[in-house]
Image 1 (cartoon, rainbow, N blue to C red):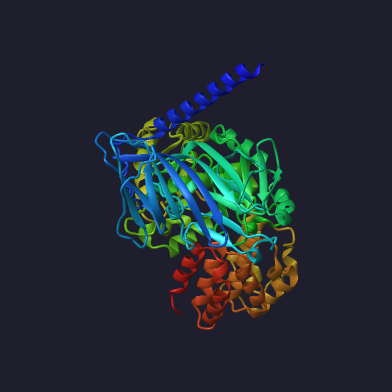
Image 2: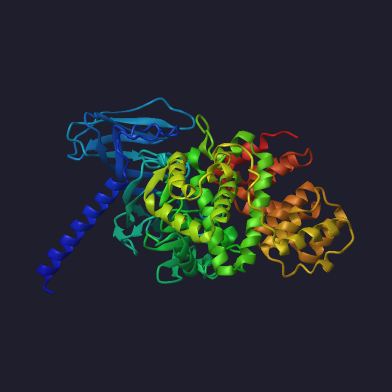
Length: 629
């Protein structure tokens, strides 16, 4: 084909691509008159709505800031004369329209939780605005790491964490999960470093610039803003399959590739249940230890904690969970954080089905039982009003709703429906739900209407018989919640009783080949406190204080704190100062802080480790430590 014809064809393809993206955004954007009220956003999307974000930013590791522009494409209602955006601690220099003309803007009063509304006056022909700004060194979404805080200890590192309402600390946009947006980005970083984002990488090797390297990205499927994600560091890549791979620091890459070897199989298993994967590639990046979560389901690129690198692929259910979010959470999203269970309940259910498909019903059953144990524990600890699936978070931090309740109770609700209707009926319904609401953000009310129309109507009276209202809107766990009995975990529980009573020794348990879930069940069923001789016998026999599996080590260290088992305290301090995953560190600080002897230790360790923790982790620890012994 000659160059002229090729050029015409390329321009035609580009035009069609732009047109298709615009059409998709339009189809996925609710009517401006049908505004979903989000108590955690200043935006007024019924007047003016952001549909696309184009970032052009430079990462400055000396000042810990991102500086540049965000160009926002807008859809306006007739007569709209301003757009309201969400910001927090952003330094706004100027705002222009698409012609480069200056626009009047104002930052409103600051709210400690929500930040400041940025109101921009619009002309009658304004279709896009460009905001010139810089982030604060203390931006809640951004963690800047020194070389000493990374695995390689040579280069610095930056990563973002937007969920729930932290994107507004680095991107001035309408920061609500109900306002989906496409995005592009150009990120300039120091020359030795690599940038990756939750989008297609258009320049894999980067493009040389006078002050570093520029990386360009594009995501042409609309997402909630909390999924716009960035990581910058000494990052290497290894493919795992035709559409899967893993990123990590070079010294971690081999371990990460080994741990996630089944990733391509997971995608295949998920597609069999939930329908086609619609995001192109699915990669995982293993971040430095301060990452506050187990994983974050950013589209195309899951952010993962290194605490899952157990060396035996025993913690891969985390990868299954984050992959499942590609359908529930990313494809179909909660419209507000009051409906968080729509993200996490569906994802936890699909995660277990993926694990069943790959590793069999016995493994899935063990995971379900551990999930139920954790749910029952949360039902005792979480304020009763917050044990409903739908939670009223008005005036509260949306992270207050991030307990085990939306995960475990949400999955149990779907499992109850599966059992009530049978998989031959439920599985096509689940796939239909994900197709029907694809690339949309919905409320529980919309979910319930769809459930009634497409599933409950098949069996008259089933809504009352299955206690649907109680599941969604009432606290606690309904009586028809499914109970899974794993024979292997039942044996582990019985072993715990025998061992605690002194009727058997640690060696007689034959626990060397136990799975992660068997250890979790065994340790969870031991009394608190456990006698010192029993603790020492377990530690001596199975070296629990030096365990490489973070889930087992966490359970052991919590038991050690509650039993005041001092030989484990060096391992406890190492664990708390070497990683910042909230699931682990917060309960351990809480357990220490609730005793007179443990509180001084907790305060000392926290002072030493605080600078290495993510701001989310610091805040959670401070809340946990607010309880006095």
